[in-house]
Image 1 (spheres, rainbow, N blue to C red):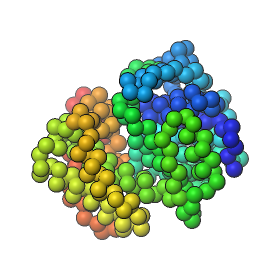
Image 2: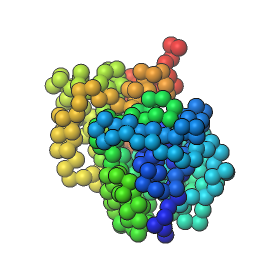
Image 3: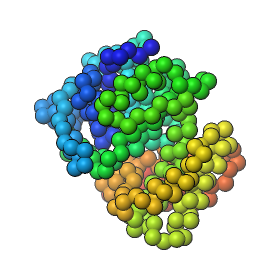
Length: 315
């Protein structure tokens, strides 16, 4: 059972993990950022700064470590690394595990919970989806655009239900000004986001353009919605129930999203970094194949993005 006074380790202290970790630290929680290189050094020397034009700026000072054996067991490990870093990041988790430690993944995609469970056991893993627009602008500096800062999370394995540990963690996060929602079955928010993120990252990445520049074309909008329904069909084949109003909310969101919005996959593409094509489009294709679900649009997006998986192939 989690206690009221929780100790957190943030594995992946960049734009997403660093932002939520900073909010938890600001609220008085014991937070250690797992980071490396210049970002780790900046947090150690100057603290972690959050800039938000709409919510206000703040600075927190908290430990930053690369070696998790120095940190030792914590109550909660929040995993926010890019999925392509799982192979190198996940081995850092075991030293953080104590008798009652839980591991909450906020990563993109639907494969991470099973990968974590294989490492630490199903009984320790919680799944979550997050909606926040942040960017690591410089070592020790995270900038937020907009006001969304939500985490929707819950149990993934076993009988669905709003367990005491999920509620306790939600109660700890809420005073940190995190828009937190505890749910009885985390598979629903994970797949709700997957239904949106696979086409959103795919279309913006393939076009190399923010969403507003492609959303004005009716044919593209139709194909976007069709791709989302391809992913929804995979969820149905796996026995996962999406939110009843998923597509109404998706349409509303896409209609009102700022035209300049870029997916994180597009941001990584533009910077010549690795991209999460295997965690998103690739995962959808593999699961679709296992169930005999046709996904022609998602397959096309995957084909366009796969050559860029490791960064610029012409570099």
